[in-house]
Length: 149
Image (cartoon, rainbow, N blue to C red; front, side):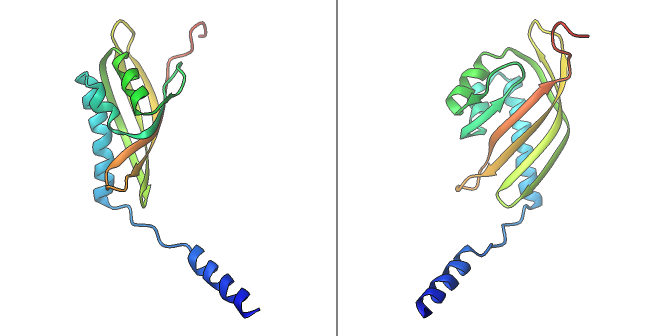
C-alpha cells in the first residue's frame, strides 16, 4: 500500500503544471517581425523566404482554395500567387509562453484582379531553437462570393 501511495505521489508531482515561460515584449516584437517579413517577401516575389517563415508542418487556409499543408506545398502555392501588393493593418499579437496568435486586417491586390480587403488569424510557436515560426494562417476576403450581391 505504501508503494501505491508513493507512486501516486510521484505521478502527481510529475504531472503538476509548471508555469509557462512569459511572453515578453521581445517575443511580441519577434512575432510582429514575422508578419512584417511575410508582407515584404510576398511583395518582393520571394516565395522560398516566405515559406521559411512557416514551421515545417505549417498550414495555410486561403480563401476559395483547399488547405495548403507543409512548407514545400506553401512554397509552391506562393510561387503561383501573382501578388501585386499586400499590406497588414491593425496587427494585434498576444501570446503565452511558446505560443502566440495574431490578427490583422489585410489589403491585397493580385495581378489582373480587383483589390480586396480581408482579415486573418494566425498562430505561431517558438521552435526548440528559439525561432518563432508560423503554424497556421487563415484569411478571408471581404468581397461577396461570386454571383451574390
